[in-house]
Image 1 (cartoon, one colour):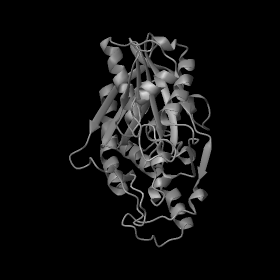
Image 2 (cartoon, helix red, strand yellow):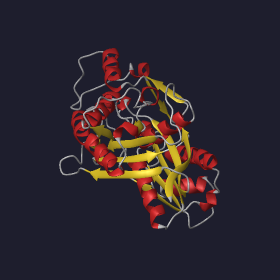
Image 3 (cartoon, one colour):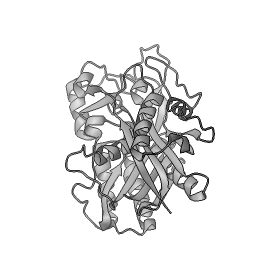
Image 4 (tube, helix red, strand yellow):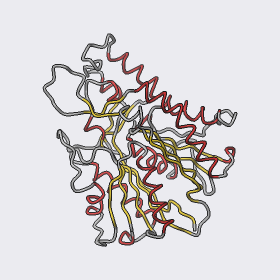
Length: 352
């Protein structure tokens, strides 16, 4: 028995927010002091570091559960399965449904329950639950689906990563330019086909690193707004990721028994172009190798960082033939890898 992705789909919001759209923001330091540079310079430096030109925001009437259901519909259609046969719906997200201009996150009922409702699935034995694991949530959902199927308690699982980070951005924080909205979904099944999930690895580093990404107040000291926004210690995350993610990827690959020269693509969480490139270079250095050309497809330049949605969205884009000079063919070995709040890390070695 092999456990494989048999269907996939994604939803990329229509609204495009370009870097120039941030020129009229009042960016401030975390202590509320002014940044001694014009916004054009701030944005230019941001682009040089992250690789982001633009990002996607959901339309005002749509929530995380809507985006998740759109991606799920496509995955179900792509897999050609009866949705009533799904045993689990696992939805990875971090902030639930945050309605436009709301200061509250709504997670009751769960996003998975809402998705099941929107998909009009009647079968009560189809169990839906949410997974909070930072940006690595979708990868962890795939790992959990794999465990359910291996144990015999499930045959078909729907795993979704969805987020509307545009609803929790501090307009006075430069880091707000990183984040975006989107959703990606896959169907996981046992199959007689060759390939599938070969090995996986997960870790949580929380002794000193638990609060590298957190919910905090606006940078504006004059604001009377008491809502909380996504915040991070960027330098600490960068250093943590460069040290720990390559080691987790190596552990996973070594466990799989696959030779590194047989890896065709690495689909890494689209967090920051410079950081992702440094992680993959460090990974290959652990094998005394140079990073191969074209090994690491990137979507962050046009789509931004949509957290749990970045990897399944990237995977779907490539398989649909919508990324220039990138393809994944049957039999190719790929690595999924992610890092995020927690601080959590995970990786999967997968044969297409």
